[in-house]
Amino acid sequence: MQSVLQTGLAAGMSAVSGFHSDKPKWVDHSLAGANVMPDDFCPDTKARINIPTKSGTPVKASYICIGAWPWGDKATWNYSPEELPAIKAAWKLLYEAGINFIDTAEAYASGTSEEIIGDLVKDLPRDSFVIQTKWLSTPTKADNFLHPVDAPVKSLRKSLERLKLDYVDIYLVHGPIHPQSIARAAEGMAKCVELGLTRAVGVANYDRDDMLQMKAELLNYGIPLAVNQCEFNVLRRYSEVSEAAVMPTCRAEGIVFQSYSSLAQSRLSGKYSTRNPPPKSYQFSSYDMPVVDKVLDVLRRVGERRGKSVPSVALNYCISKGALPLVGIRNPQQAQDAADALGWRLTREDVVEIDKVSIEGKRTMLWQQG
Image (cartoon, rainbow, N blue to C red; front, side, top):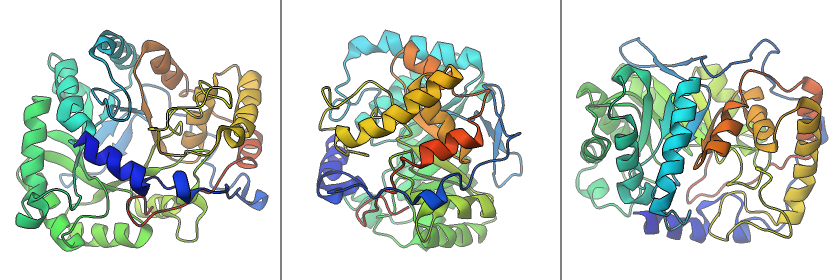
């Protein structure tokens, strides 16, 4: 499955990679400072967002989510088993700080990511952590044709075996290109809730209209659409500023907007530069580094004023826009940068400064529609 995912990325699943991004479309300066959360919105590591469920008892998750795609993944992230002690140390740091939310998928390292998570949480109280995984909803999977309603159920049962859990807290449709209709996909996701396999359900990469259709279909079963997860960062504000923007619709509809690739696959971490570009396998937000360097200069300047690292500033930017950021974490330093993104807020002037070097990004029909 990890090779299928990587092949798709190389073929154009990224909104802004390869032939999709000849030139960046800089966001109009008239939108600088738009869609900023109120000044008193300042979650710390122990704060919890309420993610809606059918039962009415919300899933209580931290305002930053640990992205576990790199855990076990060799095709994109060049994972080595020698990294496992650092991952365990990073999880310990985050968990003890109060960050309790991990995102994974059956496609990540063909299930190895889920297996690693299962080992990390096996001795912890079940109500002390939140696990979100995803159904591989692509036409590459035979069950999506043969069992259009039961496909999510079959996939989730296998994910639970790898996670060594009785249920997950949140289950997402991993992309909008499933061969079954939205109505059929919704029926399958609802069945996962009814069987007690997940508490909440959501989608990833859905555009506004499909997201609202999925919400309507799920309501036929009394289930709220809890989440839409799309790429969002300083290099891709499409979900916020496009004509059919998803993010403000989520806010109006009570749907939690999650931002993945919140550091643009490490381009906004300060680790890479024009002289040290990221690997070509890092497909999301893959503008040439001379373009990204212009953005990094501003993030560094803001960080120096606030006494924060570049990745902490980039993550706080997502939070300031009302997104719940996912960030891939592989070592304690990355964990500390994530924790340091909480408990403070960029000023409105900081956000305006960053917005003025932000990029709209694009969408693809193949994957990133939202």
